[in-house]
Figure 1 (tube, rainbow, N blue to C red):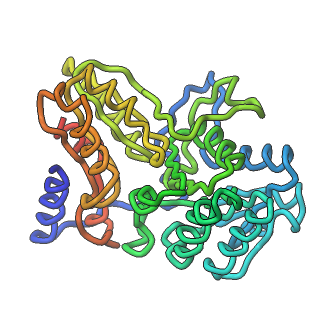
Figure 2 (cartoon, rainbow, N blue to C red):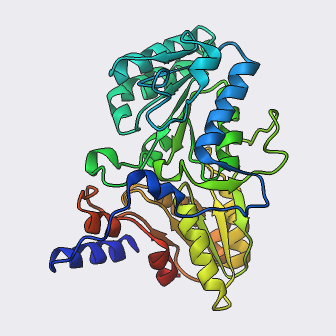
Figure 3 (cartoon, rainbow, N blue to C red):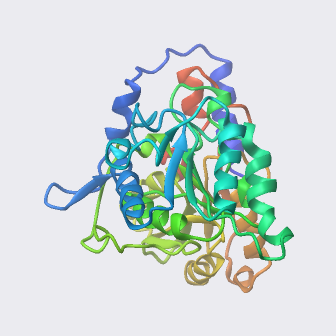
Length: 363
């Protein structure tokens, strides 16, 4: 299990003094890499999320947004910029700092036929609203015998950011992914974010939409189709970002970036890696992974969450239980975050999460 490699890197740093790496301003971090040339139409993840909400609010007057600082401040990460000016304070609602309270309002509004988008400043704060998300939103449709749907979207940044320490860096994909009744989405690119958020808003089920703060400012190419107001992506379907024949790499959210970069490095050595962007945690598109493993005969799963009981663990289990197991020429490898609370110190934080060199080394 290659979280051990992360732990060994992490542990080594504790035994020797190291000068902290030069730290970029937080606002500069997302602009480090772009995924489109200047000739292509590009859009940042932040812009794609904003456009998805604007289009759906224009299409359906039952859609509204609520959360901390979403209106007058344009959102903590400016994802809701301009929406209050266009739709007014009745549809873009600033709330007090009470996640349990405004998540409960969102769930109740969904029970009454509205389609709320509930923004958490970070999903770490959604821990205060876990009962509303899991018990009220996730279970009521089943417990009502199919009579009370709950079309609510819970969205906001998830997982590690930069310099925000243990209580602001948790990845909740595996937590929410284990709950029947919830759909869980973890997008990577701008197209992912626009198409999946629009589908989440239209979905009759509660959807947990896990964004990544480090990706908000990254630009991605947008196809002509994706620029359309009718563009939707199905929840529960993965995307093969790069085709290959020697090894399958499965990742979600920011780890897709590192997996593609590692695949580029491997290509220089003649190794053709296939990279799958999960997009959806629940439902999990295990069929796409099985198909790829049958072709490549090797599987590596990359995630930023903890190694114990994670998304990678579930994928490993399902592969072992499927016909793909007989096609494996080597054990499945997991690359995860270190099994420690996220450190605040820059040098330790860097070592606590998978990066491109580590993934390349393992492959």
